[in-house]
Length: 150
Image 1 (cartoon, rainbow, N blue to C red):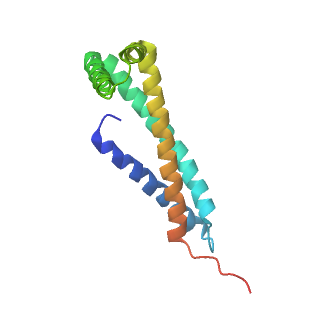
Image 2: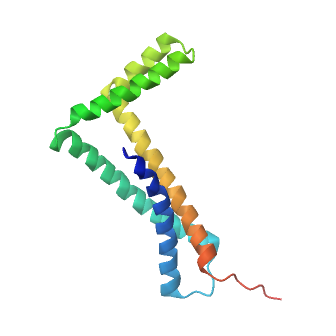
Image 3: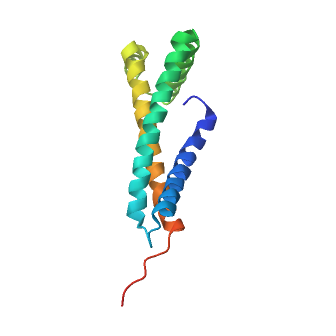
């Protein structure tokens, strides 16, 4: 979640869903498979993968803070993020009092937890969407089109 390389995970999720569709086609040998069926296979793959990624993100954040004792590093990262956001808001002419109130909210423990929960949920949804697209694309590319009956 904190790495700039993590964007590759989105494309890896799509490729994984296409791979699962290929495994399904290889094992069941259907004459054809619809794009919708591929999307449903991708959805299941995405749900399993996104929940696994969310669990690993939560576990890694817990480990960084409590097991490795790097809570001050996470707090500093969060403080820098909020300060940059505040500077951008003030630079565009936002009301300083409202910005200060929002900063107080998101600097609270509840605000931090809510923000992290929102970001993990957003990333889970994005992973599921990429998996659906990968499954549909895999179904389209890996199977023969159904012949129309005359």
